[in-house]
Image (tube, rainbow, N blue to C red; front, top):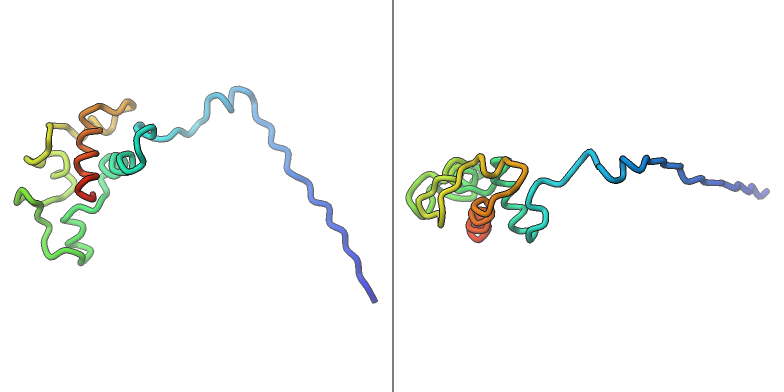
Length: 114
């Protein structure tokens, strides 16, 4: 005895208005045009997450949470470290337009593996 089954699959019809395709509801955070490693670091700074010495100590990867400058390297330290090439505030990472200062700070920390 042979049983034969035929399945017909139909693709769903997705209808989008012209307006929806030109103005998406979701957008990438500012800086997405930069190299991925810099953009990743910008996002880590923006969301206050990252591989800081303080976090590495908490995760059991490092013995202490100190940075090269001698300060505790927590999220706040990433914006106030005396070894930074320029001064930059957290607010500069939270705007709709990413500043040159924020990009320089992200590049600095990206080079340090944050």
